[in-house]
Length: 447
Ligand SMILES: Cc1cc2nc3c(=O)[nH]c(=O)nc-3n(C[C@H](O)[C@H](O)[C@H](O)COP(=O)(O)OP(=O)(O)OC[C@H]3O[C@@H](n4cnc5c(N)ncnc54)[C@H](O)[C@@H]3O)c2cc1C
Image 1 (tube, rainbow, N blue to C red):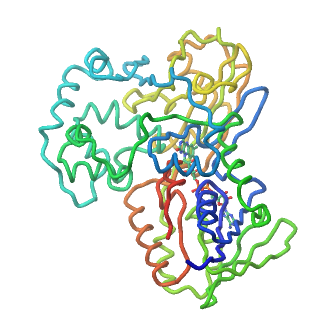
Image 2 (image 1 turned 90 degrees about the vertical axis):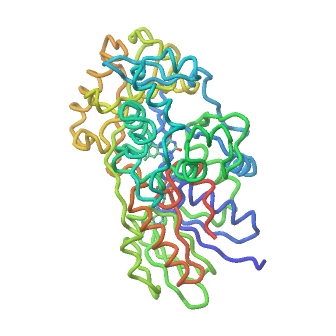
Image 3 (image 1 turned 135 degrees about the vertical axis):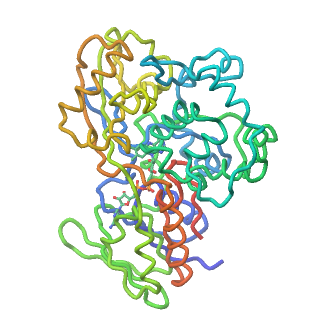
């Protein structure tokens, strides 16, 4: 295979992983990132002795492929495994924290669902296959296969925890392709799980990971192993031109200086809603850009509270908790960050990370700081027995948080493929196309 010059636009996890894989294939890569720092959404900061993660908090390592790539990048040896206690997860039911079952015995004894709700869930293997046209919402799938109570007390909080969205908005085939395929192939999820056939090879035991300096360290570690003279930060791409035989990428830095890069291929990993900031010149099938940029995402605020351990009566013995919409609280859920990973809080203190807003309450994510703090304090006081005000508070706001795998995702994926088929050497990737989880961004295969 001829070695190519490849320009990668965007230095988030998608861009960095693509750059790594292309470099390993022997290509010459140039990575261009508009921010001074690489990592995109992976942002970590030390404040008052607390280590805050503003974007992803955990990398859930399940697939052999992700594990192999991280190993090859040389980053896995630095990873920090979550505290084994973090296996335990809670939801709110009747305004109290209830632990979710970890096995069938605890499923029977747990009060996360009523006896009738559990019975309905157990009927899953007897439910016929649904319509396989790929248009079903996650809400319809869960209530059809597992029952309405499972939707209200598992599906709803789980979706707000991952996507800051509602199951009614998400498309099953885009959000959970493995579940969609499992029903298609085995009719039942339980039967599919027992037969254990999945297209992806799993590692023996799922690992929940971060890094000692927070999730941004993953980006820093990948960057260290890339060819340094070809990584440009504080350079915003302004135009991409199809030269017929090859491509020209132009960028501008903060001082207004313009740079030009000539290459054989361009791979854009910048968020699809920011693609319109770039002039795409001589591109065939321009009309596809409208669909490529179709994306829904809701505002989300992450609220960090630090305080003395004694100020909280709950054991904080788990990953954290999620709040079903039915419980009518202000927050979406809270991570027990200092239980999850070591050195997230000074000795004797705890760090809690609470999610506010999303599709459920977008206006609260955009409210004044004091209004957000008051809402979080009220909910945490009653749920965790928080007895005094936190001594440390901080808010990170995301005006547009997670690009949703709703029905628009099918449109943008189709449009990206169409543009690539018409323009040799132009590709699009990034979380809005590959799926948002960190393993999706790491594994994404562009060409
Ligand atoms: C609040 C939040 C919490 C999350 N939690 C988790 C979690 O716990 N676990 C998990 O698996 N996933 C989580 N995710 C999802 C995951 O973090 C993201 O899907 C992933 O990091 C996105 O990576 P990316 O490279 O595709 O995009 P980004 O990180 O957005 O990177 C795109 C990059 O392109 C750059 N760029 C934009 N325009 C230009 C331009 N013109 N020129 C050059 N560069 C440009 C941007 O500066 C940015 O660095 C979370 C996401 C959010 C927002």
